[in-house]
Every structure is written in structure tokens, then in C-alpha cells.
Length: 388
Ligand code: HMG
Image 1: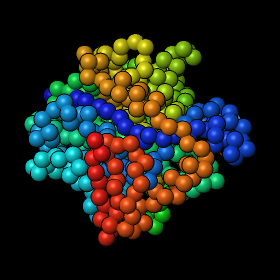
Image 2 (image 1 turned 90 degrees about the horizontal axis):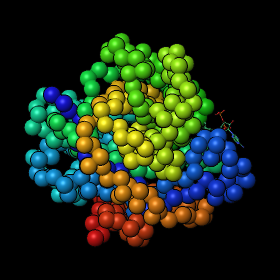
Image 3 (image 1 turned 45 degrees about the vertical axis):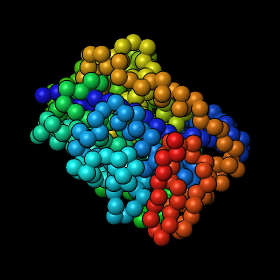
Image 4 (image 1 turned 60 degrees about the vertical axis):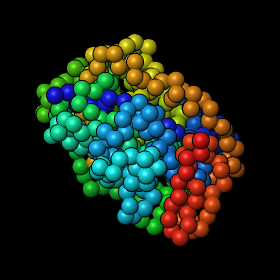
């Protein structure tokens, strides 16, 4: 049975901070960002945007194309949870009017949770082919101001419909895993911003890639040359470049510069202008490949490397299905990204300070252009609304 991604759609916030603006404010050479870490813009969420509204924007165009009563589960991956008890997926379920006969649960392990949710969904469908699972990966990357992480913020949500006989990509059985209890990036319960040991985190990422690859090859007997395109978790695009170089060195593959670029560059285009979207980032990279690759990727094998700090990693692959182009939402992705409004550094700081989910009894100003937004918090309850 083929199981995988039948439809996929991505949403981000309506605003961004340019790293040129950021560099000017901080008196840092802009090339440290555009070349050094390979980032140009970071999507910035206004106060009435959170992972639930982002997820609703990502999922709505998928739900318009199917009978929503067929959704049997919502698996919501996030490390920007809005409640310690209630799943963000249940808020989403209500906002989108999904059927009551549905299982909903939140997945967490840093940036890895999106891949975990996708794999769990494929397992559910292999057990019961009637299941149609909505997988959401949504996050808002937020670090303290004036720390090394500040330039690597961003936000986004990817919604994926996981089914039998998928129209986009069939996920192949056989994965490589790696888990190690390390403190490279974490966010204690009392904080809204993550703490990170930045340089150490990049080393742990690359080490995890090597281990996950070893396990993957043992599980599948596949080699580097069996893979046509490589999608990585992208906290910043230079990280994907470092990852691909590491994998080439590890496998001893003979890759020209042109091949290197063909294997990786299309999958970095969106991430470069959206920033880190944590659990969504790997799937933004996949969408970027599908929307931007010059040649058709029909029949090609795509690899996915998911890395979640702390750390859990997984390497797996999928085969692109024939006719996949017909169901892509490329124009919608490109339009939404292009329509974002630039922020001055001060406007970014204002959003940054207001977007604090613990403020009690607040009615949010309408800054998010919709169609879904967080309207307010009253008596510790979050209220969402559809704006059009
Ligand atoms: P930093 O101290 O700001 O920057 O930290 P740097 O001094 O290391 O410079 C970065 C690169 O720019 C260097 O290149 C410089 O040489 C170069 P590299 O040595 O890396 O090849 N550079 C320049 N290039 C051109 N012109 C210039 C110039 N100046 C410098 N003028 C760091 C960078 C990534 C550590 C920081 O941004 C950070 O802490 N980011 C947050 C942590 C992070 O993203 N880690 C990634 C791995 S962990 C992960 O992916 C998981 C995560 O997504 C969370 C989760 O799982 O939930 C983060």
C-alpha cells in the first residue's frame, strides 16, 4: 500500500523583518546574514497570530478540496504550544469545524515533532486505510533580543493531508533515527523565548545527521546516489549547506558543484525569506523544492532529514508521484509570501513585546489580515475568529 502526502499547503505571517534592516540596527555587516548564515528575511507574527491561526491558514485551502467529514485525526506538531493541557489541535478543530468523530493530539519534540507526526500518520493509515489524517507542523521561532539566535527567528505552518494512494509523495518504509539527551536548545515552561547554545547546536545537528544516516542505510540498504533531492531541517539555509557537505563527506559521494546545487538549492528558497519555522521548516523546504525546481521531480526519490534540538533526528525518504504538479498550491504560496509587509526594527520590537500569550483579559488589535486570528484572551481562555 502506498501512503504519504496527498495535499500540502504552507502559511506564514503577514509581516517580515528584513535582515538588512536588522543589520543596520545592530551595526553588523549585512553579509554576515545574507552570506554567513544565508538568510534574507524573517516572518514576524503580530500579536493576534499564534500557531493555531497559522495552522488554520495552512489547513483551510486543503479542507476546501475534500469532504472534511473524512478527517479521522489531527496530529498537531508544535513547540510553541498555547496551553499546557489542551492540544492546539483541538482549538484548530473547533475553528475549522472538523467532525467530532476525530482523534486530535499535540506532538512535541522541538523541530522534530512534524516528522514524528507524519510518520505516526503513515503508521495509522497502514493499519487502517480508511483513515485520513491532517498533520500540522506550526511554530513561531522566538529568541531573546540581542542574542545570537535573534537573527534566526521566523514563523510558519505546514498542513499535510496524509492518505492511502497519495497524489504528491509516497513515504517509503525504513527510517534512520538518533536520540541523545543534550542541552543545545531548550525552552523551560516559564519562558516564551528559547535558550540556545548556538555553535554547539550546529555541531549536534551535524553529528545527529551522521548517526541517523548510518541507521537509515542499515535499515534500507540505500546509498547517497539512490537519492535525487535532499530536504533538510533549515534553521538558516547555511545549515542545510553544511549538512549536505557533511553527508557527502560521510558517504564519500562524488558530487560536482552543479550537482550539489541541483540537489539542494530549490529546497532553500522559501526558508531563506521566511526564517526558522521549527517543526514546519523541513516541510517548508520540501514545498520550496516542489514549487521552485526547474525540472519535474516526478518519480524522484526525495530525502528528509528532521532535526529537533535536545535532540531527536530522523532520516527518511519518499517517492514523488506522477501528476503531482496538478495538486500543488504554488501560486498561493508565492502570493502570500510576496504580500508580506516589511517592518521597521521598532515595529518588530512592538510586535515582539505584545505577542505574550500570558497577558490576561486582552482584546487583540486587528493586525493579522486573517482569515483566522486570535481575537483575545479572557478569563484564561483563548478566543479565535474567522475574519472573512
Ligand atoms: P553567530 O555568533 O551569530 O555567528 O552565530 P558567527 O560569528 O558564527 O557567524 C556565522 C557565519 O557567518 C560564520 O560562518 C561566519 O564566518 C560568517 P561559518 O563559520 O558558520 O561557516 N560571517 C560572515 N560571512 C560573510 N560576511 C561577513 C560575515 N561575518 C560572519 N561579514 C549561530 C551563528 C547559528 C550560532 C546563531 O545564529 C544562533 O545561535 N542561531 C540559533 C541556533 C540555531 O539555529 N542552531 C542551528 C542548529 S540547531 C537546530 O537546527 C534546531 C532549532 O531549529 C531548534 C529546534 O530544534 O527546535 C534551532
